[in-house]
Length: 125
Image (cartoon, rainbow, N blue to C red; front, side, top):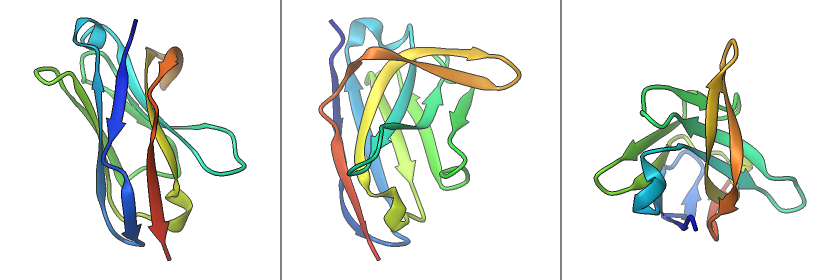
């Protein structure tokens, strides 16, 4: 069974930065693409960013391009999301996910069935 544990959320003012971490099961971390999603109150969960199993390619939602950076550390089996220039609309619970990424004109991510407990990010205006 895949285990995903997110951390790093908190309360920051608009324009601030946070780095989220997601520690994944060592046995499977290197074999799969990884992604970040978020869910704001009253809204559906939405895609934020993803990275291929090799770490060589990434994909971002238009709303976070140029502000967020996804990366992974194989030695630590950890996925990261560096979030800069945060906006109040970035407020949400952030989740990591292990899935599949494929190229079809652009890189696309398909989420797997396992989710962590999430970490709350709140950006004040």
